[in-house]
Image (cartoon, rainbow over all chains, first blue to last red):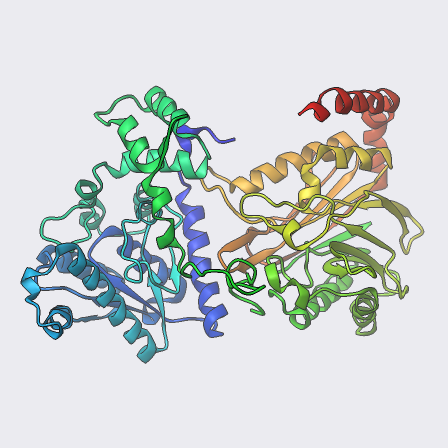
Amino acid sequence: MQDPRYVLNINPELVRRILVEAIRHTGEAIRGEAVGRWVVNLSGGLDSAIVAFLACEAVGPENVRALLLPYRTSMPASREDAMRVVEALGIGYQVYDITPAVDGLYLSKGDDPDAANKRAKGNVMARMRMIFGYEECERWNALMLGTSNKSETLLGYTTIWGDSASALNLIADLYKTQVRQLARNIGVPQVVVDKAPSADLEPNQTDESDIGFSYYAVDSVLARFVDMGMLPDEIKADLRATQGELGIDWDAAVDKLCGVATEAAMRPGLVDIMEYKRRMTPIVPKISRATIELDYRPPKQWGR
Amino acid sequence: MRIALAQIDCRLGNIPANLAAHGEALRAAREAGADFTLFPELSLTGYRLRSSINRVMLADDALAEIARRLCDEGALGAEQFAAFGCVELSPRAVVYNTTLLIQGCAPAPRFRHRKVYLPSYGMFEEERYMHPGDRFRTADIMLQDGETWRVGVLCCEDAWHDSAWLIMQARGADLVLVPSASPGRGVESERLGSQQSWHGILRTQAEFCGCYVAHCNRVGFEDDIHFWGGSAVFAPTGEIVAEGTLMDPDLLCCDLDKRVLTRTRVATPLVADENWDLTLRELRLARDEVLRED
């Protein structure tokens, strides 16, 4: 059993090799072509930047296309940072303003886009970006690269059928703090590496203020819970012993993410509740003898 | 004995393509003068078959036909041996994860090992689709030059059970074949976590058993997982005699020397010194007194 203190460490060269090979293999398995083409939505953040860098390494910049998809309230810095990535890689790109498409949805309903529920509209934006991405894929005979990391996937800090939709969710087995380790020797522009992670769906939004904990705190808890199978009480004790206080309320973090179980009652954690978002096949009430997912569980790449 | 490890990629559920890859590797091994060629676990079918396993399971007549094709097409010479992995459908319609040992001149398999320990924890779900074998045995094979080798098979997870190695020791195996489909994971240090664990185990067991250990691990991707390759042959001295590339297909060839077996066993007579009566008595006691209470 691994020492929990090192569970978030990665060997960036090994990870890089595995992910680059995964891109090549998946393109070939799905499209039957030795070199697949890939579309990636660039947000200006670190996750999508790293995915674009790895895709270029796998199939060459001529086979990667970036979409920049600002809404009218998006921070200008997002687009500037995404352009830094495009220029560093020399990949083809398109900028599509998604404002008419997103606002159009509200206009269709006879609603004022500016008066819309912020969370609902943020999700419309995330889904609209994937609609643009998939439309590009169809026209260019390409596959969609996902850019979700393991931290946000476990927390459910994603839009289901939005940013969580893709053909290959490349870095979804890497925690955010591990993505940062990977970024160090891949050539991602420093300003992109250093910026505060943000969904940029609402003005001045950051992930860590939305979540209520730093990614360092979140990943320290999740890696022990998910990867090491430690129980919430063990996680609390271990974090207090090995990480010190660091101004983090470890008990609150563990309670929120992993839930609380006493002899009297139990409350599921965020990770438990959000499992439904990770089931891209929706829950299906079982009727037949061979229900998809429950019984009929073929591999995804039969014959390839 | 010259052994070849065919560190191939396998296409999931695509027996014709995999059979062609076997033929190609066997021809290359023959060219290199190999007496014996080892393929990875489930080399004929791919690993993560899940509920599609019924589409690739093969009864003895179909397996014999595959062996015949490998020989007829000139891939496997009359005096050469090969061991490959398949999904076996027994006459009673039981499904096994089987390693078949065949010889070019013989129509029927010389030896078969049905994987005993089918991992069904974490990411693994083998026992959901297959049935465990019930024995660990060895076979004596005679090479072209008249030399006889006693070989056993521990398929992947089998090799993670010390008890299986103990049986190989007791049966006096000269060479333990370890075909595997080991997924790569653990990226926190210099070497892949899977590789570190495997090398530690195999090296130690080669020394404990006083035998050669040939580990053939596959490469390639299946859905979400990759197999790391890095096949290797370990000498009874604990040395690595040959080691394959990481993640890319490879064909490793090396020579195994019976004199090294003899020298090592005489210098460090661990197996000869083993007190089998004590071991068996104490194991039974431990089972009765401790394990059954658990």
